[in-house]
Image 1 (tube, rainbow, N blue to C red):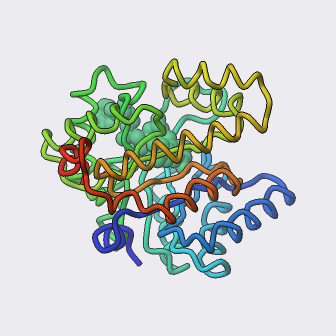
Image 2 (image 1 turned 180 degrees about the vertical axis):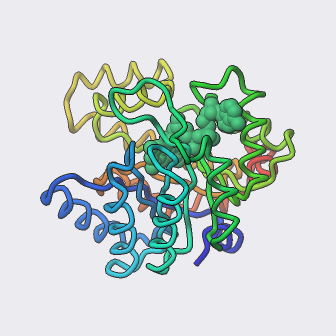
Length: 306
Ligand SMILES: Cc1cc2nc3c(=O)[nH]c(=O)nc-3n(C[C@H](O)[C@H](O)[C@H](O)COP(=O)(O)OP(=O)(O)OC[C@H]3O[C@@H](n4cnc5c(N)ncnc54)[C@H](O)[C@@H]3O)c2cc1C
């Protein structure tokens, strides 16, 4: 099923992002995680696309297996890095032939060791160009990335939102945010997005922290900030893995509940191919259904986030 239709009929949605593993052991771990999360019925799962096309085949293969063998609705990520339009077309044909209906269109990050994105010879320059290219020949439901704390390469929010509008006008039917920890950042961003005339759903990207050191590294890579009180709470855990896990899960559950009460149309979990933290948070959300509560103080935000 197409993700834009899933969001339209089932919101709030819950989705999980996986990345293609590099070893046999990690592959087994990924499928074990997928099977552990399956009873919680994520509305869809997505599989990332490695820098420089390093996981191109793996992305299509795993997206297909998660659909055919585990029974998830799936989305394949695709980036412009290191690809000609012929190469992109070949991958899109493979995705379509596998019966996958959803593609996440990205410009992508440069390969390791390369500072800036360079438009490949015969290739595309941005996610908007990729979304438009997909629309010329394929009938996928296309999603795009967005950055509540502003993309690191954008000079300011207004410029970033202008590009985001181009991406949506080029065919992105829904957006998924970069991970964030401060919900106010999301609500303010969605307001700014709506003020720009961008009407598509904005799913909130949330990472249930299982290891603080790993999460800090990820935040540094993607320029996501960690609020000082959260950083202090993790510091107080003193590097104890169990305490970090407990804090990460409790924080994410609370964060998601507030987002959903405030009108977020869905939560996209950055699960890092591990089940326990996401399972705990998603299980608690499915059981408590915070989005059905009367939208009290946060209710005024609901309309802007949908
Ligand atoms: C939910 C999510 C999933 C992701 N999955 C992957 C993945 O699978 N693989 C991967 O490699 N990376 C992934 N990323 C990271 C993403 O590729 C990087 O953040 C990358 O730097 C930007 O990609 P984009 O699609 O947002 O690019 P774009 O939307 O093209 O934007 C990139 C930058 O260029 C600017 N820009 C856009 N258009 C123009 C223009 N016409 N002229 C000048 N500047 C312009 C934007 O403001 C922005 O600063 C993901 C990010 C998110 C939030």
